[in-house]
Length: 326
View: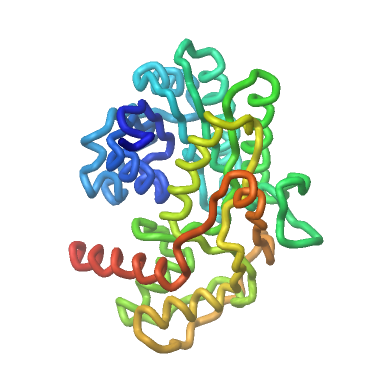
């Protein structure tokens, strides 16, 4: 029997890229899943697959503490995965207040609701990001590096991370933090991102577009790896004394934008296609990548999805998506 069988689990941001696949995996393990969602976007993988019908849904905004309290009470949750956030860097620049409200206020609302809840919660995993580190003179990022985001999105993740650690340290909440790089996989319909945008362009026989000059360095990790990491971290937080700890999760194989673009081209059309390079990226950190040795050494976690395998699986999802949405 799976560890997750029969467990009451609450997922915020359940209709997002990672949330959709996390809920799918939890349901496959026979968990009792509740979702706090801001809206029911029909294009979400969770909704289009109808898996949401197998969950308890609470419609509400993380920035509204009453919605957080309702979700915790209704779900009677033992485990919480806090994924809900505004995740687009460009949108954060255009509307920083909305991003701060969603990502910072939303996090303290959820954590304070947990603190005041009568529910016996065993583990809370908070999704942070490599953006929480801000710009560093030395790479890769390690967990003991200071957190000092600069841009609105980066600051929101720095604050999310610090809030999680504060509630763990001050109130003894069983909170742990997961810091990840660029997550890709089927279900991501934000076409400005390199992986889905390139796949779409190639399938539509259009010229792919690179917003940057192609030299920016990032971690690229498939959503299956991250779902596994989150669930693994939740189990470890319950059984080990790691509350308040943060862990980096990555493949430890940093790639340039052009590197991942070439891999997508190879999988989709079997050859390199000359892209249109805009070199218009602003207010983004040029090079970022993580050292995940702490997760390997302390938790026994490691990435299992190779880049080729991840891109092939992602490509297959989009082939089916465009076939069904002609």
